[in-house]
Image (cartoon, rainbow, N blue to C red; front, side):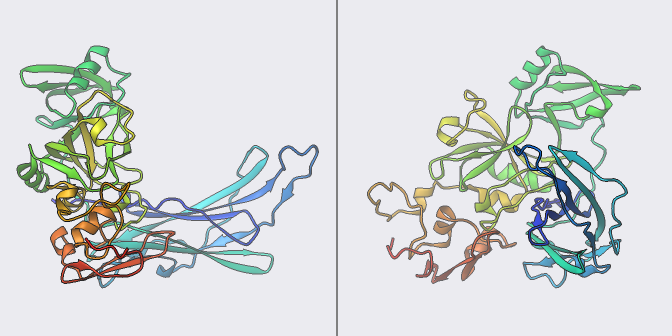
Length: 439
């Protein structure tokens, strides 16, 4: 089964024309397979804290999108011959019929258009979304551009209905205010364990279900719109999850990144900062989500030192056991807990997130510097794996083993200058950003 990993391009607004309040953004939603373009402009604004100050009125600009594929495109970044086709793009956005809304003395209007994305024949890999729009007003035309790094596209899987007998559910915790307190406590006690659906019936407004944990049965009643109920997530054991579970269940692993995406008490994903280089966890179990789950920010050290967001994908739920004080630098929720659930996109990210060996085992001959008990900067002579520990993994679609054999690692972070590290005979060469101290 192929995993769907998609990116939600953050709605970063680009302002134009110069000095005018006009904004344009692009957003890719893989669950709907749509690029959403939106534009908004301020009609008038009243200065705050200025008595009887007259409002500022802006000219009535129009906006349009060229009626061709060049207005919205996905640029291949990892050797693919071409990107997907964008279809159904309107030639122009008609002006809104209303005056929009007014908040705190500012009146604005907004409109947008959707474009379909056809990935037929596209190879999995990295893509960058690019979009543009034309702004017309005062006998002039401005072209606004927008681009953002997309991560790794792969086809969406085809899943069976998740409301069925023998469906497995992973207990993830979360605030279960709609449940009886005894059931909420029962589920919190089973955090990280799986329950099996053994009975269910659909009512007009509610669903009644019975989940089994060993010989114990847990009855649940919830509204149809709240399925799956809070506190549990439907999961499957696909080939990728099964392979990782066989290889790593019961093993102690060492997170290589700066952050780990952990499902918190409220059932949401949060980036918890790790004690990089000293954190350790034990892998308990690995499951695949049986429904799409969105994410917020992710650890840039795993994805080429780039800032991205994930949306509409089916992550791996990795059940971990860890000492929260030893593993997490700023962990505040569940301070006494030892079981955590991390959301990892796929096996590609898993092998870049977790290491079989601790950091300092990769540096047997490293000599500590005053006030620096472990290496934290790229240094001449480092191996590729040592560089991954102290800096980041590059954006490359191959396996970790293939990545470690590359002669150079390129980083092109968003909003930051790029950087290239080169290796010779498996050792880091001198260059920008590399200190001269040899290991």
